Amino acid sequence: MMNHKAIDSMLAYFRNESYISHALRVHGYATGIGAGEGLSERDFEILQIASLYHDVGIPEGLRLEGSGAGPVQERLGAPIAMELARPFLPDEEAVAQVGELVAHHHSFHYQGGPLLQMLFEADWLVNLADEGMSDEKRRRVYELYFKTATGRAYFSYVYPSALEA
Image (tube, rainbow, N blue to C red; front, side):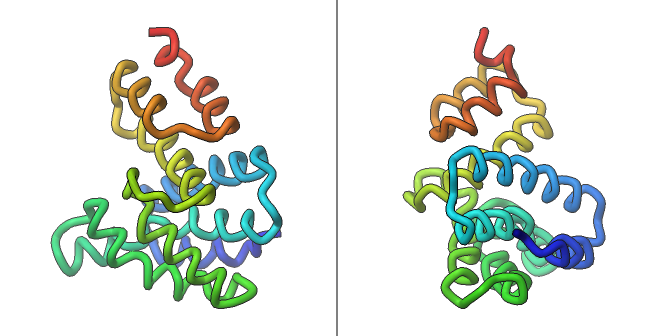
């Protein structure tokens, strides 16, 4: 079971409602997808922690480079996420996995395994709403990037008109 102090840590790091809200929404979807896909307890915990910290590179990217774009947040966010995650994970291998997930959570053609796939899907479910995409674009994202049965089911609940179009 995930330590609630990881959420406190994310809140303290961001101190910005829009980042916090996004992280909590992605975390919620990732939790549901991970549970639905039957992850082991260890993998489930790694996915939950990574989903909380997946965008921690944005503030640093904006500060250092004037950009929070995907590649910037992946590069700068991985070491930050690992440091934030360390107190809540059982070993350095799990911490490294969180870093790997954060380092590739916008690298949609990177073959990172089932945890990265679940993080992609959770992040897409939130980003598709926030970016106000058309149903046609949403359906294209669904066809390209949603692979898990649970993620596909969630998409159909959240964006039913995209699948009807």
